[in-house]
Image (tube, rainbow, N blue to C red; front, side):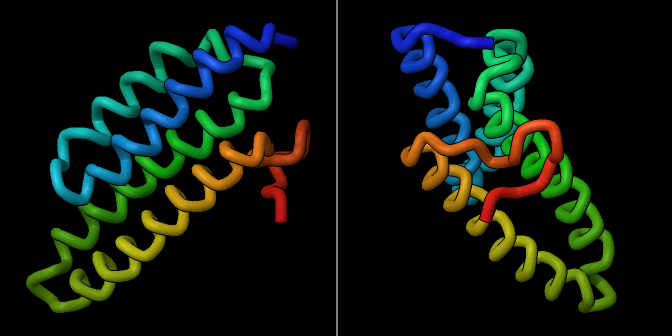
Amino acid sequence: MQIDSERQDELKKYTFLVYILQAFGFVIPILPIVGIIINFIKDDDVRGSWLETHFAWQKNTFWYGLLWTILGVVTAPFLIGYAVLGLLTIWFIYRIARGWIYLVDGKEMYRPNTGEIHE
């Protein structure tokens, strides 16, 4: 689906906003929840465009991050949780930075129809 440049710019702002909310989630944990809500509200608007891959990337970052956060917290009394949470922090920073850079460059996160991540 092709979207006009004005609409694309508007949707790109929402995509930036979600990356910002995810980044500030380190300080205010409720912000990534706001971001995922935006993802789901605007999902139909980006469907079929290159921004859809960013929305998928952001959703995966949120849901897998939530899963690993829960596992890290639950296993913290056994000390392994601290390692999980430390690695998770690095993973979050990587996902947010890579997504943001690709968005600024106007690149998709995945190759169309393959799900393969761009290198």
